[in-house]
Image (cartoon, rainbow, N blue to C red; front, side):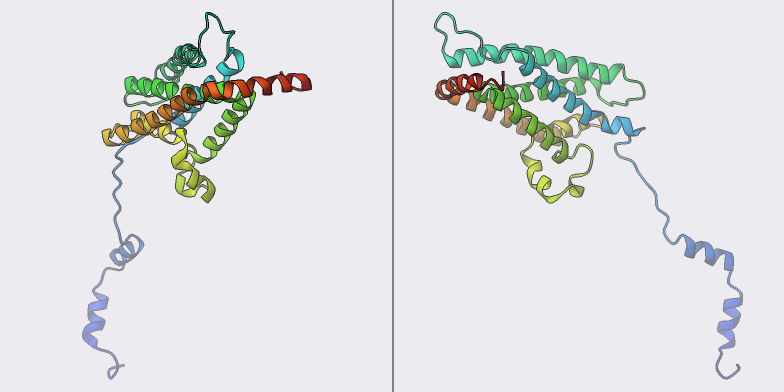
Amino acid sequence: MKSETDINELIHLLKQDPQAKGAFLAHPVDVKTYRLFPLPNYGSGMNPFYTVLAIWVGGLLLVSVLVIDPFRENGNTARAMYIGRLLTFWTLNLLQAFVVTVGAAMFLPHIFIRDPHWFVMFGLLAGMVFTVIIFTLVSLFGNVGKAMAIILLVLQIAGAGGTYPVELIPPFFRLLNPWLPFTYAIDLMREAVGGIVWENVRRDVVRLCLFAVAALLAGLSFQAPLSRWMRVFKEKVAESKLFH
């Protein structure tokens, strides 16, 4: 023992505090957490997704209940009827979005929203964008457009990152994510819930407006050319006695 052991090292080891060493080895790093945008509960974090979902479903209900193409009177053109009817749907969906957002911001218990007035404003913007997309699909393609709007809703529920982070969803939906209106509407509502970063707000607003402009241009450009074909298609569908 004398030949193989340094007595000084042994004395140094015996002077050590074993409890202090054990505490250090158990917790070598002291982690401090700083919450930048804290939310008090799970419901507050899911609120943007379900609010956006409710606004889209409200638009679907409108096109299912109301007439898209009223009887033409006074020689109105297809474009004029498209714009006039779109204004009606815009008004009704804005009322729906207002009720949904105000209800979530003021009447739902235990739901935290840091900026309620911006939450309402962002909800109204999402309602306008969703309405022009849904209305254009149904106006151009009739019942087929309603099916397309429902399919788009299903894809957005899975691929917009509303319930799971985008990094955890399947690759197909990760590729689809940047092309979905839900992606930017949910992010926009989250800004109002947790705390606004205006750079993110500007990005989301611009991209939502691009969706609306694209749908509006498609409706104005293809309304007249497709109306004749869709009229023949509707007549054939009616003759089949399978659909309304």
